[in-house]
Image (tube, rainbow, N blue to C red; front, side):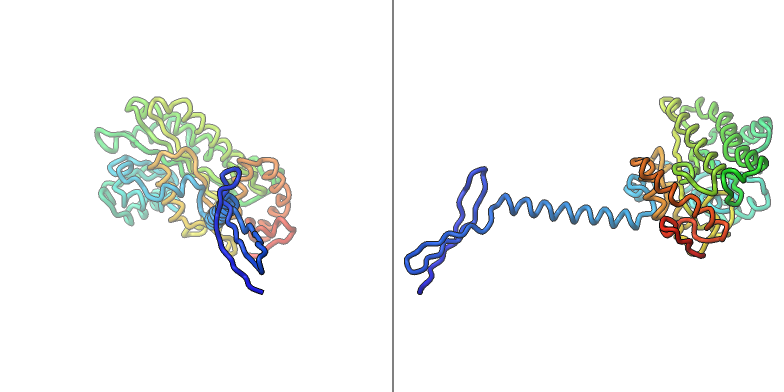
Length: 366
């Protein structure tokens, strides 16, 4: 018995290239079609799609921000340098870190908070083109009457001759320890909204006319993931952030043609240096994976310098929940309903309020 073989290709129907093996055994010819080019092409395309999707999923799993934000990579320094930047809540936490990073980028800073002594401490630590000597301190309580807010704005507008406020970083916020929606007190309700909503909106309403006269101005609003998704145990705080989001997105829509920009920043849990502060993300729980305050500030400045309208800053699973609620609300809200009661219980026990184990009825200890 003897074999003789050959390999060749022909053009089949549908422009397919068929790879064929002919073999001959004792005078009998056997033809074996191995594969065609179209099948090979589909195979490679499928493999490419699988690899690309796997890479995207991996990147998403380790991301600390939304895709648009992370695509910007670097601060546009020319958008920050020599600009007048007013920061509220600048005496600690994210506000303090924002001040340090903005000073290093050459911004002219105005720092506000209720505690003037702490503001002086922050000012002395700043370095940059105008820091610390030309950094201005402006003590301010956002729950003050409108006349006091007007006085603060007049001072801020006069600090740097010939120029007014270019950026208003609304960072100050108020939050009490987590409680259920029905357990919140009248005092806590009013205190939260006076600072987070009424004071912030009033300051914006009074400052905006100055910006409109110059034909430019940019509000950077430190909102929260709690302003994008349900936040069991933080009902009033969440409501205040939803209110901010609604107001500032509407403000931008009304005034963007007149030079007014708005960037709404929605951080999830953030680890601040002192473990306490004014935002929802500042209470340290060791087992929770939190974005550092430095990284949060960096991404916030990147977002502002690129003029992004809204950005999300968080690790998983919070980032995934934000995407679900935004794009698949039925699934997102179902998921939050599953963890709601357990999250409140975990908070009461000082446990991890962002753990996936809450979905399965397990409260992970700190």
